[in-house]
Image (tube, rainbow, N blue to C red; front, side, top):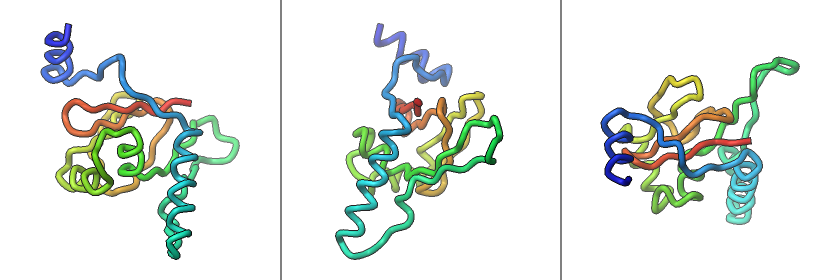
Length: 130
């Protein structure tokens, strides 16, 4: 039940099996929409581009440079971009790689791969899917 889920998630620092997801194509949409909005307001924010990195012809899956506040806000894991930025500054946002290693997000933008999980605060999780 809920108590068991809470204990598992909080005490053992496990990732819940059920969580919100966001796909690469959705990430592209969010970033290009933000891009269009910033251009409309008369300034071009190159930051909003979803950048795909990876060696050409390599089998390693591509990494995407994404705006963490934009994505957390899109999925309502935070109330605003500024809340997301505050959480990042406080060290409250982590990326849990699909291999299992974690790192604390220190900038608004970070590299993510399919299968990675963004953890915002103690109990909010978002998985990147194909």
